[in-house]
Image (tube, rainbow, N blue to C red):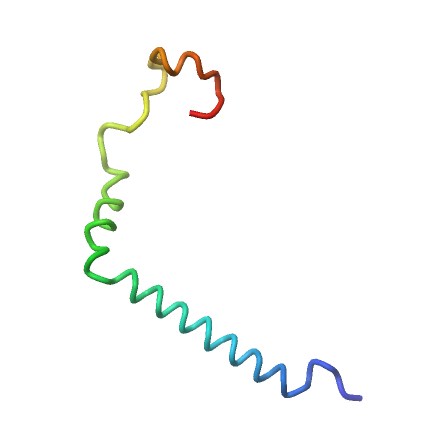
Length: 74
């Protein structure tokens, strides 16, 4: 009995998909390591270490613009 998934076509298809995914991975890796991205990634890596958060501190009263916005969109 010949199983439909044993067809050589599926072996070639999975091989092609594997090679394409590997090429996409290598492309993303090369893109991420380009010199022009270094400053952006360095800045993003320092975000967790910042002393002052961007938004209001917990328990801090909201300003006039924030008081009108009761949990909706900013």
